[in-house]
Amino acid sequence: MAPAIEVQNVSKFFGSLRAVDDVSVSIEEKSLTILIGPNGSGKTTLINTIAGLYHADTGKVLFNGRDVTRLQSHQIYKMGLARTFQIPSLFGKLSVLENAMVAAKGNPGENFLRSMVRSSWMKKEREVAESSFKTLSVVGLYSMWDKPAESLSGGQMKLLEIGRALMGGAKVVLLDEPISGVNPKLAHEIFETLVNLRRELGVTFFIIEHRLDIALQYIDTVVAMAYGKLIAAGKPELVMADPRLIEAYLGA
Image 1 (tube, rainbow, N blue to C red):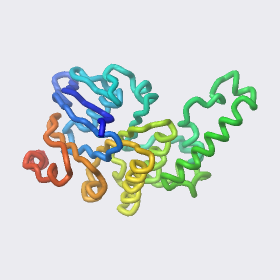
Image 2: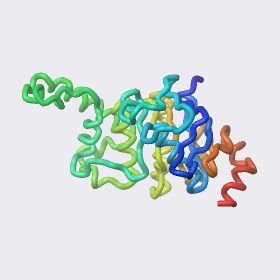
Image 3: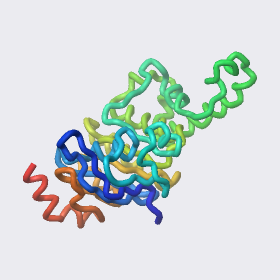
Image 4: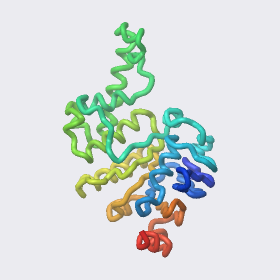
């Protein structure tokens, strides 16, 4: 299967700190991959560089074969790659449905002049609402569509962020600790949702995660970093037994 993301000899510096050090890795299309490593190993910097929040100082980032190394994050997002954060950023006073709807692209009602002519955007608005309901059903939030987003639990907020990424047309989603602080039952539900989205919609997920006792039950591939470098990548059972990974965690 073709890679959705290719990182080629990427380095990112902050002054004298080499946060990402000559990393090369491929994330296969329609895969579920986790990125692991001790705190300070460069995981978040790598994700931010892929998403365009940072620009690589050396090397290249390819998305679906296209060089996106110098593109801005909003340009990469429009191409179908979304990034969520450990702390969800939702519109707390808006409903769950409204949070999903605002992520849809190309709504004519957002145009200042066309918004004054109801007939020019009502059909599109209905279509977006229908699509949002379907997305909320897929991520397990359909029954909460009319609840304010601020009333959701932390895990439900993370599911809503995934839903918003899908509403924005994302086919690749970078997730930052989606089950951090989430109770075990909902944590399993979140990963089950990711598996379903990969299977039914062909979405690719690249995920920073520390709760390996849960994550390893669902993923295809593990990528491990330490001290800014890639130390292992491959099948979970092989990477988790790699002495370099064990040494990295013990050393940290």
